[in-house]
Length: 286
Image 1 (tube, rainbow, N blue to C red):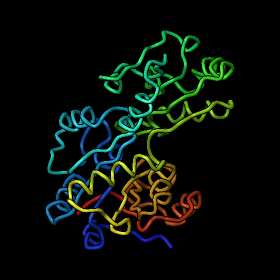
Image 2 (cartoon, rainbow, N blue to C red):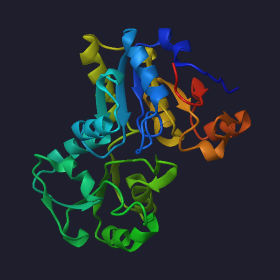
Image 3 (cartoon, rainbow, N blue to C red):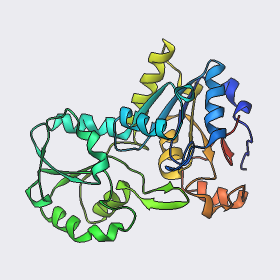
Image 4 (cartoon, one colour):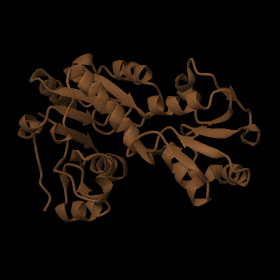
């Protein structure tokens, strides 16, 4: 049975910490969503702690700049955990190695203050750092098949700084680094992932929450919020925390009308996961 929840306040007394997804939940890359932002701010005002947990392939400071451009204020969250920050630890552990950056120039903050030598071509690299497509408006993963086949022939490892397959930009779905990483895996390539659904980003987020609260946080008092079965729901399940699923996100077209999702379609969607979410909300609101 799918449990629909219209208001975050129905769950607020049961949780101290929210680990909230960003793209598709509080903004779409073009505009902020006022009601979800208000809901998070109201949760914080009641003593709760909010850590934004995102597969953005950039450091938290860079993500915060984007939030400011979208007029999302600091009253909405306490801290930010990013796939980019997790990836930076990998890069630091491979200092001096030649890396081929597969991704757009906007992701350059990922490398700030790190000892990384860049290879002009994949064939000259020791490994690949994938943050996305060079042009995600016009290209698809198939654009990169030949490059990835050559990298696989050279046994190059890849670190994927954004495990998302797609993300909403406005009302359009665009490919992310995860789509390239999955193609590389089908070719037999070795891929390390930096963000959700893998444990390191959740461990970082929980540590940030504990620091803000001044005490360790029990996982049963943590609620993850997100719109992706593959990353948000799977990540919450793997980490042992509850999940509130936002249906009006990247899966909206699979589950019926954006404002009125079909329960049977949701059950089919959740069958991909080890267990269903605690509840489903069409859009996060207080």
